[in-house]
Amino acid sequence: NMQTRSTAEAILNGLQLARAEAVRRNNNVQLTLAGTGWTATVVRSGEQIQARPAQEGSVNTTVTVTPVAANGVTFNSLGRVIPNNDGSASITQVDVGSAVLPVPQSRELRTTIGLGGSIRLCDTQAPAGDTRACE
Image (cartoon, rainbow, N blue to C red):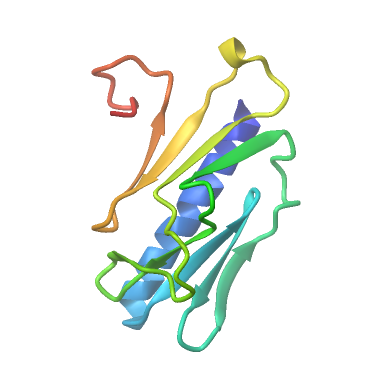
């Protein structure tokens, strides 16, 4: 469960970095996911801002992206989600779970990305009404 949280927080941090850099640079920034790793890149110049290699910890986690074919999300200078340059679908949700623990023992975490640029990490197993719950 610690590796699940570590992976979910790493992806959350990458998304927050990409959004903040888009606003700071007044330029579109795309975050591309590759398994548990990610790369934040300035769209216009191709400059890589920061990356987290997939091999960096969290080997026992699974990452599921929604929509299924999506692998990136682009933020504009206002921090909002815009269409990706290549026309691919933008990531709207990332679920992180354990690859080794049985479902009742694992804590699956979800990161959601709203069109307005809001990014939220929530616990899929938290009870309704709990501030950590996904609603």
